[in-house]
Image (cartoon, rainbow, N blue to C red):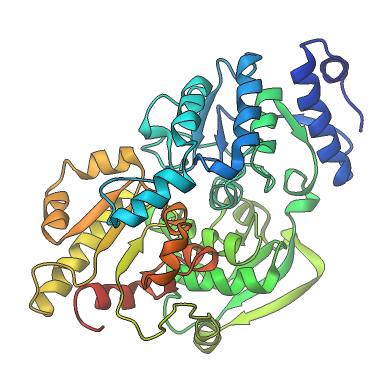
Length: 424
């Protein structure tokens, strides 16, 4: 790898041993993927995927202390993935014991480290850091050093920024050093599409289900999606961006997609069109029957497959303000239709703290509370990592949560029907 004189000096120890090790790590990372040089990180914020204080990750927190003691992250701005615990979220005494005494014993230590990194309050903990209310929104062309897969795919695809699917700690090192190895999705060639996806559905496809189908088919490749603009239009408005937020999270978790192009809609597809498609690209046709086939293929790993749902999570990734408002309206209609005042299943909606704060200024927040729904900043995935959750019948409209936990996936319409008492 060709380093600049300044980068070589850091590698040689001009800013101390810790910085030298960071640069050495980044060089080894780049060498693994045949990167020829480093490129500057240009975004205003970093984002770290680690948001939890797990007992088994003590060496990671020791490394955080080493970085902090060396004064390296000082003056930088960061956001982080959501916290794993919230006392408002339904749990048993045994759940709490496992969470606090066995699993997240390092949480207090970790959050103190985050404060030293510059994360000053709960506003900065969310997987949807790019939302306007949070403020970590990269500009088109910005080079990032992030790791959270749903945030990376959104930044690359919807915002037109450039970021690889980094691992935890690597992303922090790139932000501290101020540069990252140039390969993959940081290059023009790496952003070209190896798959053409033709959407031929008769109705607007469920975002999470369509993303799942594409992710499982193309894996880590870049898809160029045709036909979706029929429902999303050609303007990246709030509705389109919300759809793509959930769609992208599913492509990234059910596969390993770090970038997608939507014909006539996402920035690079609008600018370059089919020039983004590689010669010999494979074709995947998706219709309503294909989506049903994919949905039917999901395994049900509940201990009792026919069990009555005990808990519902909506918001993985975190919900937008519009989603909270739309779900409140839909819940009210569904409950009235089924002659109920409150939800039939304990339900948690998750969103960033700044979004929740704005939502709480509205009457919808009062209505949602009256319906019995908890609104939380929690990470549902981290909550579900409790081994006791494997014995619970948890339902969700998130394909990411389904993939990584024992939660069972239903479409948003099915979830609404279940939690309003329309079906068991």
